[in-house]
Length: 264
Image (tube, rainbow, N blue to C red):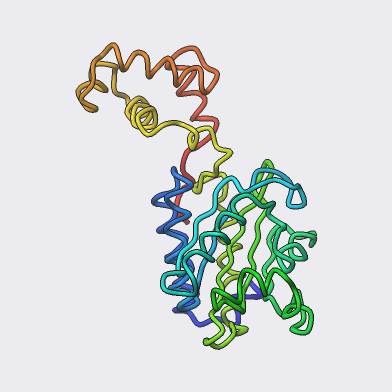
């Protein structure tokens, strides 16, 4: 609660609203990640926002499992942005000099400003800034990271344009509360890309939802507008995916592992 003491009640409420909205899309990590982009902009103001998830330890040289961003429109050269975007999506999570320092910290949840991680005299000499960010007009940034249970982590980073004021201490406190609240729900109300549900195709996910609501195969077929024989194929694919052999075993799997965490 240390960070929240510096925030107004409306700002604290704003964080919980954003997390709650993400929770409504929590079964799909890409959907709630995209919604989080706009939520961060609401909390800290106009910014380029980047949200990414990676699969293993923070220091591993592995590319992001997912990366979504917003706020670049009309900033700098489109060709430069597209080059940067391709670079980041193929890079390890510690590609950014400041983010690399953040990821080396031991805490489960950590948030720092760029200036806390790298002094100006170092930052403005770095190739990363001069080759990728300055052409886009992007300068100041906040970096948030939370370890995902079972491995990997969630990274959230709002970035300010050089023409804007740097992020304030209040923005930093807002990000700390946001990352803490997101972290409480990761792998629970907020599914991740490591989650077996997230790896289902949309059609199989619809079939699973119907099965868990108690529909039989004929009801599922009517509900989805497909043949019963196709539903049987989908059901068998779902059984294989979760390592079960029957409807009771599937139900038991989800009783042991709640798909949604109850609202606070």
